[in-house]
Length: 367
Ligand SMILES: Cc1c2[nH]c(c1CCC(=O)O)Cc1[nH]c(c(CCC(=O)O)c1C)Cc1[nH]c(c(CCC(=O)O)c1C)Cc1[nH]c(c(C)c1CCC(=O)O)C2
Image 1 (cartoon, protein in one colour):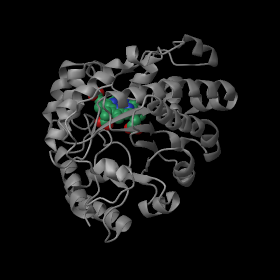
Image 2 (cartoon, protein in one colour):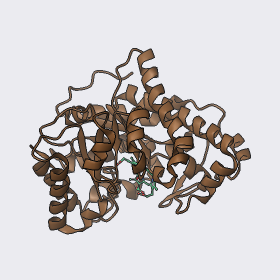
Image 3 (cartoon, protein in one colour):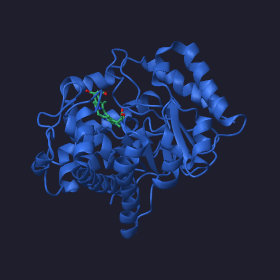
Image 4 (cartoon, protein in one colour):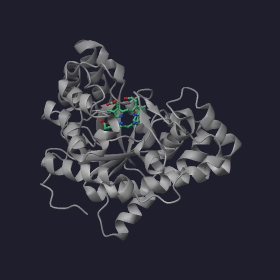
């Protein structure tokens, strides 16, 4: 358990995650570390990536810390959180699978049939397999010196299962869904096995210094609601409940947990009530006031500007951020809202337009 961290100077994110009112909405951006920074207008990430492979950066705490801090330095005073530089696919690696990034994810030997599950490691020792993430978190937390909180994360079982079965980012999810419908029991067993690794991985990140953790279910919206309920929801609940229970058993305080069930907007009320998370991240296909009505006061919300608005120039960015803020909070100070994009920032966004987006959130989300 890492301790002795410098005191936190900006706790907007943690207050909003607990559902409290804040003087303005805290803001951070999914994929803020690295994804758009290969742009020639932002040399700092390119410099690191020119010399080191993607997973090499993840596995080298000094490099992961450097890349995590780049957006914090570049947008000093504008970002309210750092997110550790890593990837959701380090969990399949820890389970014994080979994952390459060239430039998208590629699994040379995906799980074609349930028989392939025998090739996975029978037991995953997360300290041994993923200790490099814990080391990167502790180091980053020290170097942040309390400027902003540090977010840890993992992929959700359904999203990881899709990658492990499809072997790459899919358009149709045919192979992953074939598993669900042809081999439901084996699918559930594999989803639970992934979930158990996620539990230990999140607990380890929190012990290493993560102050909030987010579970990315990027492909949640690909499932029909009743299939989500059958396959994805039980393992998400298991993660939230087990992380809390394990922390409590070790005498450690809980940290807020965020679920980002991208596209599962029909299930917001149910997720808020039953999944066990403090914050639900939403994409741009639901309006924030409707999301708030669906979830009530049970959870905080995170989101949800369409990331493509950042390609629209200053006029569009300002208009859209203003609209999002005004529609959601009226004249009141924001309550239980973490401003963000509705999915990760995309490659090719001008880093100065990202800055303008952050400035607009500061301006228009204030009471
Ligand atoms: C689905 C998913 C992945 N990874 C992730 C998700 C869930 C979020 C989402 O839905 O966007 C999560 C992720 N990936 C990365 C982070 C780092 C922290 C952050 O800045 O948010 C996070 C939180 C770094 C990364 N992960 C990846 C990069 C690209 C960069 C490089 O080669 O340096 C970065 C910075 C590569 C990656 N990793 C993944 C894909 C599909 C790709 C291909 C390219 C891309 O989409 O950017 C899988």
